[in-house]
Length: 394
Image (cartoon, rainbow, N blue to C red):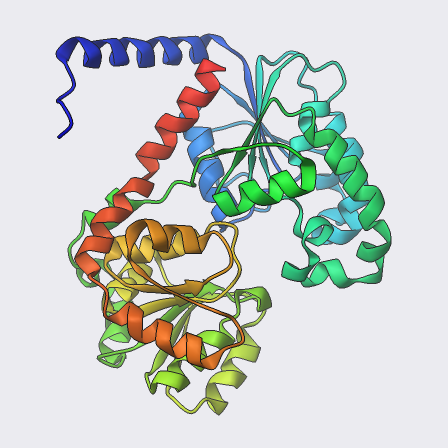
């Protein structure tokens, strides 16, 4: 049995945290992010950084929310934001590298890059004396793991891969503290850059989700009517409607188990998914642009949440587990770690119908309450404390 923490030990811990906070308040920081989108897991991490470090400068290549996401902060954009390049990321790629190297961080005490492409190159900026941290969502997939990103199969990407790998590996050596969002990504960082990374899982709104026993009561009348029209039992797929999220496998899971399917989200693949829904052997409903409250209600109502992609971490499966929904995730990727840690679902091997069917059946049988309780380990407050300690102590 563990001993209770002595009062003097708790006081010493509190004094240490206060000292770290005072130290951070006196230092000048820079938060660097690739580009700001209206939605996305990387943006949820950035939200926490912006809130954690209110005095830090914020820099991005461009802001697709036009300042709306952080209306109370002065977010600096690069020169690319004033050009058509912002609308074509692959064409902007050659301009990104020198832009990150020119980020003015010589006057900063620390730099925190939120990187899934080249933002960590800000640590290599000219004249930089700042202590650099890089929160790595993933090393650039189409450079280092094209098997997970179709963009990496283009002729331009194949030609540029080797030179970009050399530049990227060299820049990664200048990061003082690499931070991975999962053990899966930590292994990829080691393989790609030869660096050992600290693992800090992304923030999940567990406390917020679990504060409401029944989210059905929190949706607006229009969404309440939609909820009332859904089948009593269904499998849920929810994400951006893009090909790599593999929502077609959610439909396949429904066909294999003879269960209706609900797909929730938005994106360029919506028309293709609607075509798929008309051809499916089970009923498939597509709900476009659900609110957060609606999404949480769908988690709670579903038999299971099916999340097929190979994901770097996967915030949504943890949200689902926190809401009490068992999950089915790919055995490859970061989402597998959260299922193992919470016992909140099952994994499947992509390409195997029998594995997918067995995973759905196994997930439906798990203890929802136990998984929901275990999901609290991923709450945003724990992320905040780990990041404050990392930056303050370094």
